[in-house]
Amino acid sequence: SQQGEEDPQALSIQEGENATMNCSYKTSINNLQWYRQNSGRGLVHLILIRSNEREKHSGRLRVTLDTSKKSSSLLITASRAADTASYFCATTGANSKLTFGKGITLSVRP
Amino acid sequence: SQTIHQWPATLVQPVGSPLSLECTVEGTSNPNLYWYRQAAGRGLQLLFYSVGIGQISSEVPQNLSASRPQDRQFILSSKKLLLSDSGFYLCAWSGKKGASNQPQHFGDGTRLSIL
Image 1 (tube, each protein chain N blue to C red):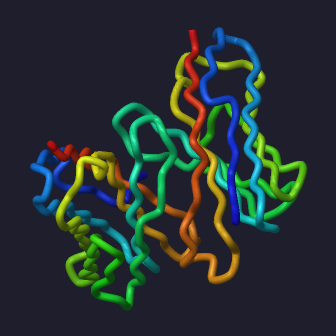
Image 2 (cartoon, chains in turn orange, green; image 1 turned 60 degrees about the vertical axis):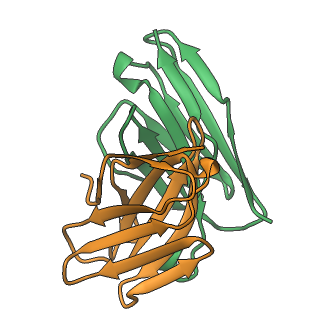
């Protein structure tokens, strides 16, 4: 069963704007990860945030984690056309296996 | 650096035919290996994972099987394909150190169409 649920399902923004994507989950986690998937390709790992962390940055990416609300957000600042892709959150529980959400389709218009 | 290779990239097979998809990892040893299936517009469903040679765990009952004959080789097979086996199949690996906090690294997938 899928634990993570992303919101919104689809997002369309103008190049240069910020994109915010949300993920909610149901059970306790060791960490939460975000992945990107370009059309027809495999997934690329973006960032991992552990359950005892609240915020993490990597380049133009900012991830927050609120374990009390069982939610996470991924912010992409100053978006580019090349950011157009599907974005997935995935949670890891005690068994080290990843459980993925259904993904968010991000379109960045040039 | 580590790389992961999957082949073929696309495959069209008739119903009832056998299947063999191969995945190999380079640049690391003793990885955890995974097979996922992704239906159109959906997330990934874990099919099999392996922590070592000959060690396979199945996540869902299905028409598929997996084998790990060598440390960095993971094979997905079927004796008789069903229409419902169509999908995008992804192989991934992760390191073992601090396993629950390791990211997974994916191949480029195989698009399987059953006719």
